[in-house]
Image: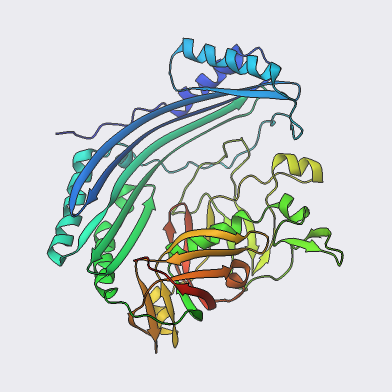
Length: 448
């Protein structure tokens, strides 16, 4: 029997102290040091029984040395002085012979970070295999009782990062995460969920299991309907998948160089700026970078040292800011933004059932799959539905339907949003379900 033990990772003071020692040992003109540690544990189950228990401890130290505009990095996964000294030496030797970086930027000066503490849940950090097994046993018992073939994972992570450079920059963060996924299959019906939280006790595992079992039964014997453009309700996981592809495309350099849906182009096809300030989407679309959101509580800095603070991205359907790397910000005389992560889209107090009740005819999409860009410049994507797609009629789910392949312009999707549900955390985003006036389903898919 394995009982709970505390996560065996450094605290933030110890991590920063190690970073400081590495910086002092460097003989380069400049140096950037990044340290990460973590402990992850996972239990996997299939056909209603546990099939795998794994645990992994990770330590990684990366040293990037600078000589003028030349730089090189070396890493070690060994936590001892000799290995660290060899890593510093290798980084410096490689940097001296590296070509000059045409997009070089100077080392970042010390930054001001928000005064808040990211979520670190001790119960999650010390959750044992036995405790995970007891939870999975209950999930499997519910599946067996219902006649469902259940599979999925339950995992926990505790992690820490620390960075510093020779200009005096110092930052550290630590956190925890727990993830539960469950796929329920019966006959030709299938349903799925995947939910993440910073605390394992915040995951509504029993409720999710019951919902997935019910939806798996409801998805049996799907009917075929013709592809075409239909009103659609996208559940939160589908929204998360599609929304992130749109957010990744809010890149200033791509817009300025004419490679983006955010580019403004003149009559000769030349880029003449970007579309910031234009009313491009539904006024219901409000999207922010919000690491302090109660469902997220992420760290205060990014891996490069820039601040991870609150930032309005889209307000009332109008893009407010584009993502500037340090290099492109330097070229354009702007401030670098840091990554657009994590993302929060505001919702309402309505439930997904409320959105269904407001829909005369349409399609409910539980999940999207294999979503890829068909044309990044126009923001057109292609993908498939799976794990529960349903026909809605007169405000109710009428029957399951066969899955589709879709080809959809995401800018048009966000333009056509006309209702939102309450938000939930899906992976590392917080999003609502959304109702869209029309969504383009291009063909029938054989996915389940």
